[in-house]
Image 1 (tube, rainbow, N blue to C red):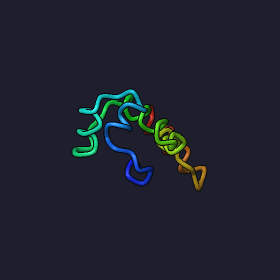
Image 2: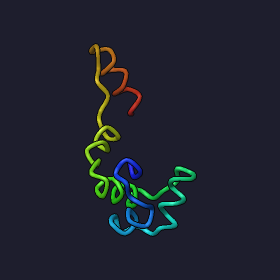
Image 3: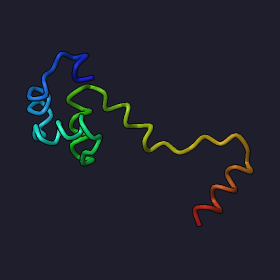
Image 4: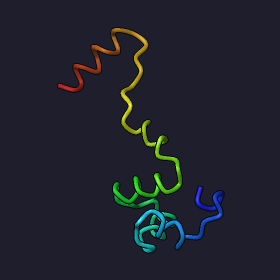
Length: 73
């Protein structure tokens, strides 16, 4: 997304308020703090894509609801 928006690593890091080292590590390894991930998402305008991380699963049957409730106990 950074490249699609024609941003350098330095530009994105500054825009998001994260360190350049954190951004480089994220692009190379995929490791990043949650706070930095959120900041980068907002800077890139893709924060809505984080919604799926916290969505509850869709259930097809009542049996799936009951089974999920039992697992949560």
